[in-house]
Amino acid sequence: DTRFANQYAIQWFPGHMAKTLRMMEQEIQHVDASLVLLDARIPLSSLNPEIERITARKPKLYALNKADLADPAVTEEWIRYFHEADAGCVAISAKQKGGANAVEAAIEKELSGLLARRQNRGMAGAKTQVMLCGIPNVGKSTFINTFAGSARAKAADRPGVTKGKQWVSTEKFDLLDMPGVLWKKFDSKTIASNLAFIGSIKDDILDVEELVMNLLDEVRRNYPDLVAQRYKLDAETLALPPYELMEAIGRKRGLLVRGGEVNTERCAVMLVDEFRACKWGRISLERPPQRDDMTDFAEED
Ligand code: GDP
Image (tube, rainbow, N blue to C red):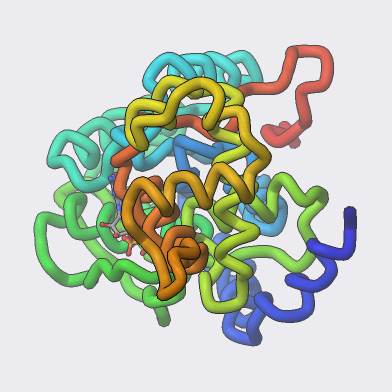
């Protein structure tokens, strides 16, 4: 179903994203490395091919952010997957203090060759310049705040708030914050859905009911117990077609309109909010592909 992807390709790639990509192409030439934030719940769907292209020629570290929301066992699998492809990767929760430290240590490890060369050239004191990038809402502002230990970057609950360009420094690093950027055309409906589930595509251009039906359908396949427990559903109800399942949950929650019908729109908004707030539990929406069909996201040059 390419209609879905095409439809959004037109609507949600605004001019400022094209501008961001041009800015990144400029800036990458001047930094030592890049730090790409991915969402731990959807590492591949949140891997922007445009960012991959731009950052390909410099050392790079992936940080799977929001690991506190993801299934820890699956996150472990992802880290193994990235490492097997020779890509540096750490799991972090930008909201927690430890997140920044973990990344600092990992960047140093990733860049050890570069840092050693600098030391040899008597440039040991020079700060390492790192470009921070990722899709909208992945947690860049939050990471910057934790990393720099200041309130310089303001985190927002809605995508698309980080704008412009800013440097943030620590003792060892200069971090260049880039605005969040999506890409023009998704390869699959799954990617588009995954990005929508976690809130990286603005909800106001989406059909929230359709979004939630897809989400319920997806999550109950891998985490049936979590959905059942959260909404106190018996096995029979959990197996209903998605729309009826959503209605059943709405009825349980008393989200009714006059006449006793379920207000499915309110129900959908409630469900997606609760999912994003981790009320369903820690859920990963994507698992590593089998080794045979590994993509070459970590292209060496
Ligand atoms: P940006 O658009 O990439 O700058 O993303 P923000 O830093 O504004 O973060 C978007 C939302 O994700 C905010 O509501 C943050 O509080 C939340 N967030 C960021 N990092 C984490 C994390 O590690 N764990 C959790 N649970 N939430 C996070």
